[in-house]
Amino acid sequence: MSHPTQQPEPEFAAFVGIDWADRQHFWACQMPGSRRIEQGELPQTPEAVEEWAMELHRRFGGAPVAVALEQSRGALIFLLGKYAHLILYPVHPTSLANYRKTFRPSGAKDDPSDASLVLDMLVHHRDRLRRMSPDTVETRTLQMLVEHRRKLVNDRTRFTNRLTSQLKLYFPQILEWFDAVDSPLVGDLLERWPTLQELQKAKPATLRRFFTQHNCRGQEKIDQRLEQIRRAVPATGDSALLTASRSVVCALVAMLRALRDAIVAHDEQIDPLARCHPDFAIFASLPGAGPVLVPRLIAALGTQRDRYRSAHEIQCYSGIAPVKESSGQQIWVHWRWACPKFVRQTFHEWAGHSIGFSQWARTYYDRQRALKKGHHAAVRALAFKWIRILFRCWQNRTPYDEAIYLNALRRRQSPLIAPPQPIVELQLKKRGGFWKITPADA
View 1 (cartoon, rainbow, N blue to C red):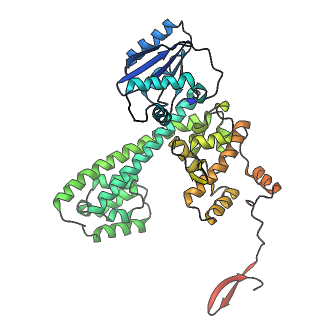
View 2 (cartoon, one colour):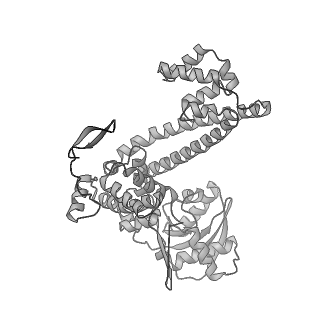
């Protein structure tokens, strides 16, 4: 993934606006100081893009050409990103839609005119756009891997829910006997005995050996499961449901196994990349950031320190900072809708994990809940504070130290530092025929 960053602008030989589509793109080109606009079509093939980019290179002698398009991730952005003479400026779809309404309140829209609108934004409002500047190869690889891993985890959750729903129809005992329906143990069991009737036909010695091979070594626990299997009653006798459910459960189990293997393979690629990253020590020092969240936080910030001028820019970009709208005497505060959802999720999940590892984070979260805020609202507020701390550590290349931050809070007499609780000696006393733990001076 490429990141926009503020850089000195070169002298462009031409400006190009592209309205992209799945198979055919429309472009509009304008030279500096000229009002004449050239237009054309560009097929979505590597060969066509190569020919078009090389024609621009020959025509303008390799001079930089500014290209704006309504895309920050996708096939076209990657196709154009390999040409050094093309300087890319992404345009947010919402920005283009609102810009279109300025000139076409009727809502009229077509691809060639949209290409001209993108070009107009590039020529006249380029100071409002941010140039794409690729991060290091290692960082971009990490960014893509952690995002793909999260999608695999989401797929695993989706298929697990489907498996749970199906088991409730004909084999609900599995959900009572085992805690994790997506575990290798349950998957192997359902693959071998997908129905209760088949499971009950298995010999006790076979089942005992199966559980032992899957590290269920507590003899008492195995005996309990064998007894549960023996006494279980089928939930249904509908042969149509049993046949269909057996088929779909076997398919879901196979997909869950493939997803587990894929997640492990991604972890094996992500871990060495993260540990070799120059900022690994900074992110590994953060409370609650474990082996999954550390690479995601590295990917969220990248290595380009000049990309953000303040922590507030990260808070707004990630969607953690709320949006305030005001009109007359009315003020409306809502969360940010247009933002990179994966980055926002990363900061949100990290802030939630930090509650169990950071003293001041726990206190801040509890204070937010005391103000009648919901769990997620309180976690977002905590993430807002964490980003300011993370930004300072990231800019200064200094790992986070909880003791240093707590001392700073004490110097400012922050309410996040809970006063030390007095030590109370306890004793065991018998009252009313019951033994109770009470203070020693009671």
